[in-house]
Image 1: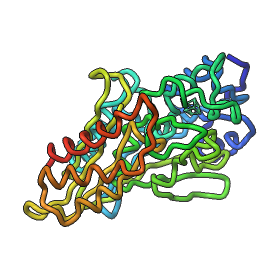
Image 2 (image 1 turned 120 degrees about the horizontal axis):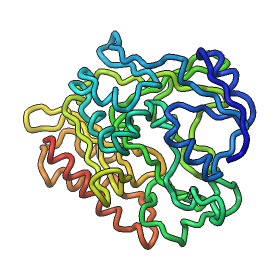
Image 3 (image 1 turned 180 degrees about the horizontal axis):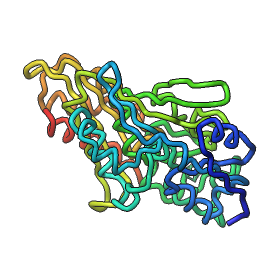
Image 4 (image 1 turned 90 degrees about the horizontal axis):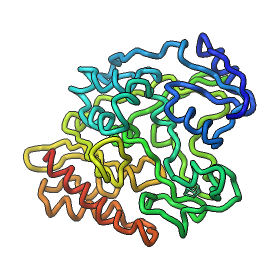
Length: 325
Ligand code: SF4
């Protein structure tokens, strides 16, 4: 591990100021960055610890939604009664991720900004990786890529976004509140993560020094009837091969409105708007779900060893919808 300075920020302003320095990195729960520093994948000159700046509350908002502090742990969020009652998909997504020990320290903001589990990205000694070393190539394209993405990929990077929580939040049309040197701004969660394109090293739209302070989930008609289904190689402590966050607003047996987002198959938490459109106004039947699920994968670009994900993701959507309908 390279030498670095350490600052424990005492408030948001101090964190923003220190975090804007070149090669500074924020530390929240540490479940990603400590690993990556040990592997020489991330080599910051300065660590800005956010652990003393607060942001540990979960509050009800005036519109009936919730506001979650960025340093609320994944365990605290999953155990929160209001969140569980209003947004079951959030609790299911969090509990499907990592291990209990990791969820005890991993934070709301850090979960959204965790970095890919592509094994080549984490192999700083040998492997080419455009995300870690721009311009060096992508060892996953033509390499071992069974776990990689089929949606939102480029010829520079096919890494999946690893967060389950972010997939649930995209389906619920959540937003993130951001504090920076220029003040506070709020963006839709869908606008936080960026597809790799020609610059896979750029993963989000945060500016240097900007800190996520809160995640806000609005009240809506579909959240209560929501569900997260994750398909993986083993039953726990594994990343998704495919996952689906689904939410339905029903009028009798007819789908009045729907939200669908996918994990494990996209370079970003993937909102499946084509599937939502195909569900809207239709009867909640298996035939409807099968047709709608196909729409989500129309733009898929596969590699020889991950082509199975197209059928797997479709089946995951269908099963998730059947389980709540
Ligand atoms: Fe790196 Fe992306 Fe290629 Fe993985 S898929 S090796 S993260 S460029």
